[in-house]
Length: 491
Image 1 (cartoon, rainbow, N blue to C red):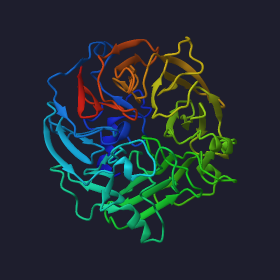
Image 2: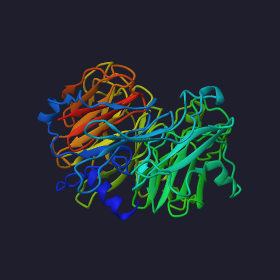
Image 3: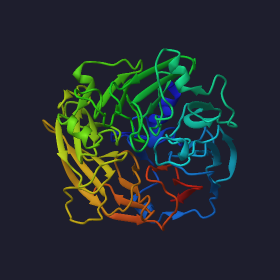
Image 4: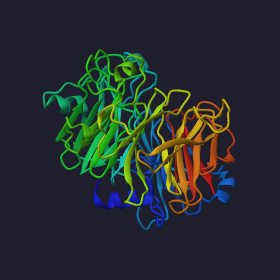
């Protein structure tokens, strides 16, 4: 990411900020607030007290054209009091909306979406823009389009001023890879992972469709922002190994991190059920410090128990020696794997592995500090909740310093639904609040004290919130994306 964007993103959402954390900037440029996917937003005005009195702004009238899976983004130029929401839909519309009133500023349709009947399998209909775009300073995204009966994945760059398509874009992924002698089948590849930017290169990750049909692979494609004809690619060696999580790619210290799902037919490990570290050149590393897979990866393959249903989450654990960089991976096998971020250890190389959920974990987690510990919140029914309760669909882990670090369940919250979570603090550590969406169930916005789990807010029901959806926090509002509209909560 370019220098100014790094500054904005760093101010916006701090993964594990120091006590002297500064207030966030007013923009949300990427999924979960920053490229590490922390989901931690620093919002000075959003105290416990303010959260209790949150209200839905009924004058906010933001109409969206089609189903919404991607997280909305917020662009507010430096020094400006006005901002705009950027929304990408499955109907292949990008819309810019006034962030205060919801009024549409511009819209751009980038091509006909793909209807379910044109796909060999899947569960999104129509299929258009699913992965969350990224802003830097234009907006970039992947769209599935159907042209003359043929399915394409096209990567677009649009001007934020009026939605004009940038010169040299879109890039047809299959055609671009074919020029370098590589095969990519757009009919069986699907794109729901959030996009990322590193070293002036746009990175787009792919998995397959619901149902695992066809000869799809896990792909990471890199496109130069200076020369859109310069294409890089990483591909899993075995069939499958999709990069499924909406959290997609994490960026830390000049490296990309991602998790893959189950491979099919692999008799020896071939990149499935894994966490990877890649440089911006996307070169595969055979060094064990750059990949991890559970020892029972073959069993996970056979049971479709993907590790790649959730994005790996970078963590910084405080300590007297300057702290320790960790990585947390969550799996459909109900386990949490704690890794050394500097040395993943190869197959079976985890520091800690614990069963933390009673159900498969498919989520994008959020992290925030509480004292000397790091807390991680995610939507799934906890296996070791301090208080029993079947409806406790929000689990919060406490990770504490030690050799190895310890991982326990701090608290569980009552949550029905499959939305994702974020966390807010007022200064990087004070007044931690976990916000969760009861998507496709009670469809309410819930808030809990991040330190104790005490419920402090529950909204009235909303409608049309998809199970891959998450919310964003801005200077004086929370925004929730849904089919055909955006909800705005004021505090």
